[in-house]
Length: 269
Image (cartoon, rainbow, N blue to C red; front, side):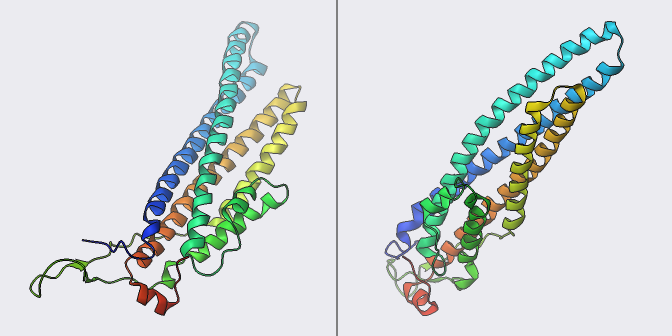
């Protein structure tokens, strides 16, 4: 199979491939986030069990429980360090994916996308704006990448290939990949909830002085772990779904003649 290198979309071949690579890195980082959250929830649950045993233990068992509690605290602290490292790496990889995604959507998505790559990325950091802008960006990108706006390509004769009337070379487009729902609104709602709960628990942890206070904070942190884990799972779904959506739209554009694209009103910028 040959592919037309003179096609107006040919200049985006490498960039679309690069987006797939960035998506895989973002998914890997999100999977690491899930692992860190599972770790944190596990060691905090162990700490809660030890705190419960400490209240009902005799003096001889209390020493052993205290040693275990110190070990559990060390694991919790190690988990916090891992969390902040993974959070920073995930943010960088996810935003690199968003930046290129918006760039490519502006190049061959449907209609006008109001977001520039830089403004899409900064939308994750600006106070107040960060509560809704990331959702708006990915929602608009998801809609602009609807592959159904481009007719599915069919096999066509490669007029540039050598041959005669008995030997015809066809340009055959690859098979489409299945597309899934991104659940962008659900993901962003859960992500915002996780961040709000995390801030509340961090503030509560600063004032915890009694065993009951610490237990309440740890239970709250386990809830944060669960909600953040769900957000990470949904984020993986968003990255995979939107990337597949872009790849399918590009596949249709890439294997459709410029004349047919013009007739369909599909433009490449």
